[in-house]
Amino acid sequence: MDYITISTTGNAIDFGDLTSDTAQSAGTSNGSYDRGVFGGHHLSTNVINYITISTTGNAIDFGDLTVGRRGPGATSNGTDNRGVFGAGFSNTAVNVVDYITIPTTGNAANFGDLTEVRYLVAAVSSATNQRGVFGGGTTGVGVNTMDYITISTLGNALGFGDLTVARGDIGATSNGTNDRGVFGGGAYWNYENIIEYITISTTGDSTDFGDLTLGRHLLAATSNGTNERGVWGGGSDPSKHNILDYITISTTGDAIDFGDLTEEKDNVAACSNA
Image (spheres, rainbow, N blue to C red):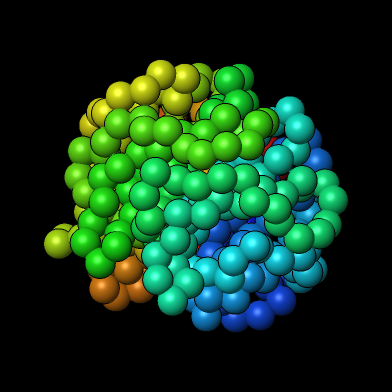
């Protein structure tokens, strides 16, 4: 694990290690409790790890997902410390959504289902209306579907709209202060540099935002709440990269170089405590 200070630019610094080597996991957090949580595993195990974001050190076991899988999407809300993990691949693609209470440890519980099965999805959320949106993914072919849930309740997802390009392996993040979610990168036929955005409190198709500095997939994104900055890290095209890009979420335009991760890697996950 690496860490950065999102409000500045510069290279990442070593943070610690997860409980095991993994890929295609998903990360989420709740800034009020300073805890980051990572769930899913490339071997389709059900492990969930957690860290205290403001300190450095190795991750600790949190509990288990209801279904062991790789390539879920994860997000959270800001009022009841709930994190949700949706979709993934467990021998076959699934549409299951699980939830956890981030300040406590323990196994995930069933939340409901997405509108269709898929994996390598991305997710964003808005604390103001408790809405989480899962976008993109693959079933062997790229998917442009976006679904939404109300995180503070339980139940199945509803259709939100479509991404501009069908693809999986996307990095996505959001900033609750302006109700905007952004999806960047990904791949189906091509390694995409596309960034697109939605207004989370409404439904509808995404809109072009700008471009990443390099088209790639299997990257991760996170953001802070103080200067509206979103950061994408890692990815491959198919060579692995240590690139970090950033945008100002409340505006549109192309991403700018932020710095580098400590090593070139893909299949990454990210979270923040801002």
